[in-house]
Length: 182
Image 1 (cartoon, rainbow, N blue to C red):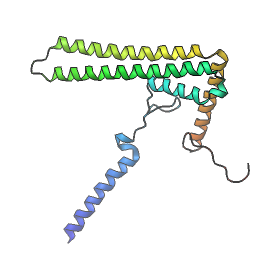
Image 2 (cartoon, one colour):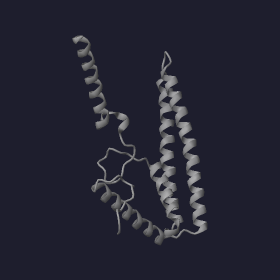
Image 3 (cartoon, rainbow, N blue to C red):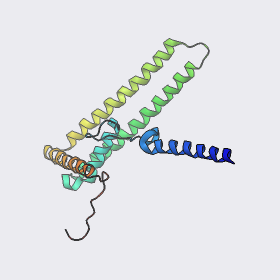
Image 4 (cartoon, one colour):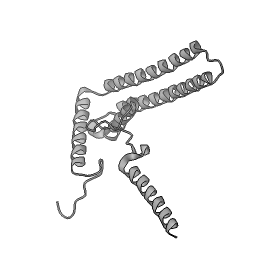
């Protein structure tokens, strides 16, 4: 009977230790995905995500920024053009990655051919990044100087509010709830 209780105790202790490390951030799946500028570097945001967030921010605040219908249409077209390009580039990159794996899985590896595939893969990644940078530049030309300044001011205020919320212990992006009269 003592052996059973000892065995159960050890099993529960192991489970408790494993679960506590998962809740304490020990699990790699608990890592954050994106990063704000004021964070310590645990999160990372791709250029692709930054572009997408900027487009979303502009469209969500189009009235306050003062976008015309023509500007809104141009931004909408740019957004989908970039998305289509990214999908196409990602598919080609994935296919090259499979070609590389296949070539490395052969009994005799042709390093010259594999190196050529690697060069193609990273040339596509570089071109994808250049295309996103070009889209960011194009986005700036769609907005007037006043609209860009208004957007920068709105972003600065949003970031400042987010930092203050985090310092007060609130979840980022959560609205402050008031109790009673203001």
